[in-house]
Image (tube, rainbow, N blue to C red; front, side, top):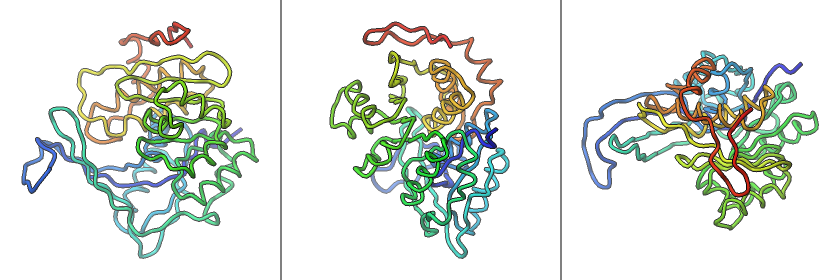
Length: 320
């Protein structure tokens, strides 16, 4: 038996969010309609999402010993995420971000400061935590530690999941993608990676490197799931009536999809749950305030159309 369903390795941040009338293009003073402060970071939010659904989770990272570093750890612990693998840099500062969300359409500007706590090192990686997982989830941050953890995971038979965010492609990621079993990337990342504009061609390029599952997300356009064996299918993005902020929706999708895989769901069921979690997470300001429980997801799914839109060569209904 594995102690953890999913272990994440990445950078955790504290996000300060404001809902405003305008995104600044010049000097500007304005009153925020709402504000929030909470943990962020792609892998970190995916782990929080999975934990909220009931997964056993842990996080590997390096934070400062400042107030923000303490907030990061306290929020993880409150969510049930194991923090034994988080290293604290004495006298160092943690990552932080300021996010302005335009009220009328949800458009965002993000300013971030990485802090000076430095990268997690290979020696920092708690290998016993990695090998105790079903899935290791990474996005290439803490590069040396990331590659080391991935190799430890593969040797131990732990599945590896890679998150490729929009505008974050770098050629060194090709080495990491070749070691991944599950590759969940934004459309812009996929097309940049493959130097192809068609997502089917981009998915094919990613699959050729070795992943067993490639997922390409398109925001409001839903997601396309390409298994190495079997037919590809489309999962729609579910609508919500009370949408507030899309921050973290994609990260929440990642965590929920991996939760489904760890629990033995079919790909179509995992994609449905992931789409539901991504949608429900837009109900409040910030990337984690509205993360749903498993009960909320299972109450939401019967209220929305549970079909996968027709795709090239297949019409699926998302049964799972």
